[in-house]
Image (cartoon, rainbow, N blue to C red; front, top):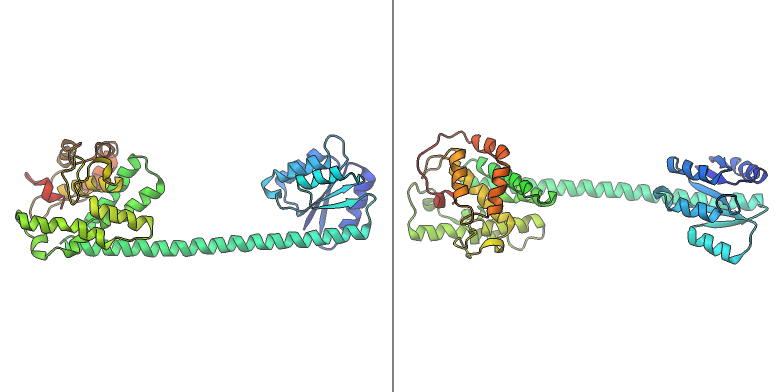
Length: 356
């Protein structure tokens, strides 16, 4: 343990240092200059301070006030040594942060007892702080493990949905990455971007309820079949409803609203503009551009450049213009993701069917 003494009078300083330095396990450093002591405290951690009240340049109360402003000294015990019995002086020192008082001349036995008691208090403080730190570390580690398991389950569920849709899982990974880049280009908070990256792969959760004959039909869907297909948004919203985390709530928004359109002509509820959650508006762009660039049983793949042109053409009708602007700004990051698909470009496609 370390003790700092601030006392300008040489004899008193020597007496205080001599008495306390004989205590086992205690190293003592004494200062005549209050300013020098405060500067030392900025760089060294003392466990206990003994401060004289009447000093030239700074009073003990002013020293205590300066110490309490240092982050590491908010709870360090401080003994004020004073020959002044003025009540107002003591109250001011207490208000500044003094822990104990010792009268001059100092009684050696009383000094040892008070120093010993306050060092015990300081040890208890440090033990409690260490325990709090370790508990916080354990909580962070446990939270991280829970989060990792949640993320793993999300990706496994999303891949199961993709297999159900006749894909192998790359589509959801690309949609997640493109959605992330769009959110970052829109300057969304880090937490929003992270949740979107994990929630975007669940956009087609409701396709679990779509019959295989419709889901894998090679030709154009009939009106009745299209009605069944469009139900996947509602079913996905129901599956992901009543979530207790921001991540699952965002996934529900995306599953339910990623086929809504900026102009209000989408489904299932005909929402328009800002009525559509931002997460769903972002995923709508990511989902469609990836679908256009992917070969499906009902269409060949488009080139990324052609798919981008289609997204631009539908800005302000199908898509949020701000999200389309984000696509343009982050195209140098997004185009390589779409190029990874590796399919040859085709000559025709239907954007409505391509978007699911």
